[in-house]
Length: 228
Image 1: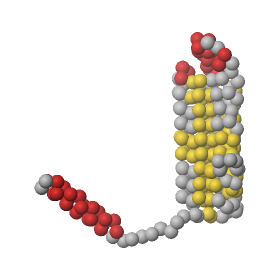
Image 2: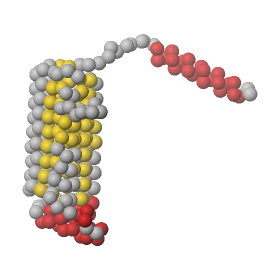
Image 3: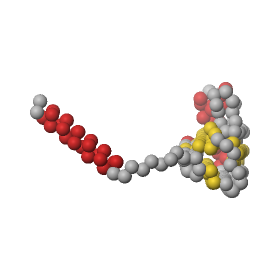
Image 4: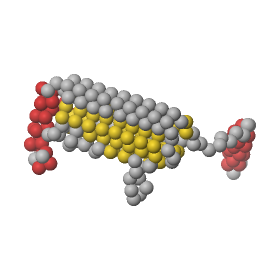
C-alpha cells in the first residue's frame, strides 16, 4: 500500500501506475495531476481529465470519461458513463451504462441506472435511480434522520424537478414527475405528478410602494446627517 511507503517511493510508484494506465490505452490528459491506486481497473478507451483523484476499489468501464476535479472511491463506473467535473462518488456508488453525473454532484451507496442523468448540484445517498430517469439541479435525497439511513427509489424515466427534496423512505414511480421545488415525503405512483408547494401570495403594487417608502426614508436620513 502507498501509505506504508516513503513519499519518494509513493511518487515513483504513482508514476508507474500512470504509465501502466497509458500503456493499457487510458488517455490521461495531464498524467502528473491524476492520482491512481494499485487496484484501479480501467476498461478500453477511458479518458481521464486533469486533477482527478481515484481512490481504492474503483472500476471504470469502456469509453467512460472522468472530468476534472472529480473524486472517486469505492465505485463502479459503467461503460460510456460521464463523471464531473467537480463530482464526488463515494463508496457503494454504481453508475450503469451511459449514465451521467455532472458538476457538483455527490453520490453514496446509490445506483444510477442505465442512461439516467444527474447533471448538477445534486446529492444521491442510499438511492436506486431507474434507467433514463432525470434528476434536476438542486435535488437531494434526505436519507438520514440523525440515527438511521433510509432508502429512496426512483423509477424508470421519472423526472425529478429542480430543487426537490425526496424525504426517505420514499418511492417515486416509473414515468412520474415531481414538480420543481417539491418536498416529497409520500410515495408517488407510476405516471403521477406530485407538486408540493405553498400557496403563492400576490400583492400588486406592493414592491413599488416598498421601494418608494425606503427611498424616502434613506433620503430623510441623508438630509438629517447633512444638517448635523
